[in-house]
Figure 1 (spheres, helix red, strand yellow):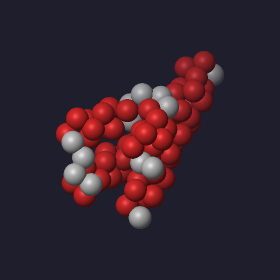
Figure 2 (cartoon, rainbow, N blue to C red):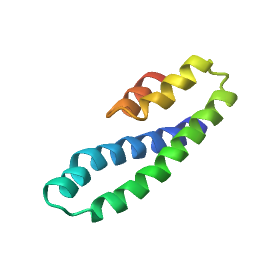
Figure 3 (tube, rainbow, N blue to C red):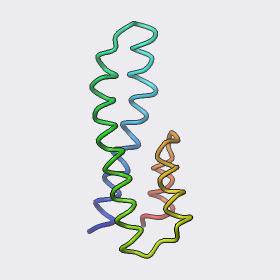
Length: 91
């Protein structure tokens, strides 16, 4: 159950980062419409915090190495990184 919920948070965080980078930011800087960044940015921020909290929880529950925890958290700031983490570590 813990890993299943972490998968959903990872997917949400990854999708929100992609929407922020490839839709909201171009709308802000090309078409001068910052409204998307405010909304998507808030959603992404909440999902990022949830992702990090879940990663720490899984670290303790499944006795991950510190190296794996750091990798999983760093992957959250790279586009498509959370999808890689889901595929490699959350199955």
